[in-house]
Length: 343
Image (cartoon, rainbow, N blue to C red; front, top):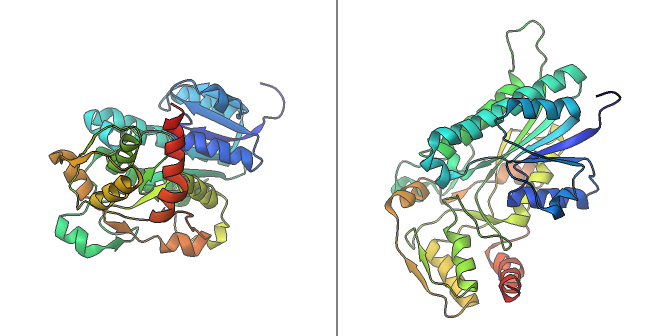
């Protein structure tokens, strides 16, 4: 391919909801150089917002290599992953996708940074699944946990995400550290550790924190819902718009003010029972029961009740728009009502 390559921001896993929201948000901020990759063909509305779109597997090294050879990638949002519940059914495949895909992109990004002299910014969403509380008593006593505590994940997805956090730090700080021609700080690696995400626009699938959003979507459709965790189960959540805004805010933050590579994010942390009460108030007549699944309950019990996100608030001004009350009153209830009223 002759001539100067077009600069671009690469978004993998672009077909998921975070991908859709990220593409729309970047376009609203004036970005027109979006290159999107997903395992399935993107919807027309999303394709039209991108400079180029590609269908393929993140584990296809030839494909990712071709992307980085065709475009001068300045920024990567690596969203492609197999989530916690699905990953437990196919853990080896999950490892291939979650770790292998990340490692391949990190290597290619580092080599692009080396060959062109401009550091690629690599932004990775991690997960609360990276944590592993040893027991319920410790979980309740610990309260809000920092980024560096209780990192003994019990799921393949959590293990993958925690390792990818370390891989990103390695490529950013220590890549090829014994080589005579090594380049310091070859990558600009930044990572958010998401809590459970709640969206008004899609019903989730594949995540173990999905009991919250599944509950409200079922109630809005007049369908009964059997919650797979106990009423006293408590983990942190945030809304999808806040999750996307935070990802962009970290990506564009002043690097000199960042004190770490991985940042916790939180917003509110109702128990499943409290969540059910709010859903029932919003949708009277909602049928919500609790039928804990032993295995999925154990996974959620291994995640902290809340996270300390003070580093994100201090370093780059993280400030979610939605607390528990406004998440329901201003976002979830009106949007979900409108969605199913039109169905």
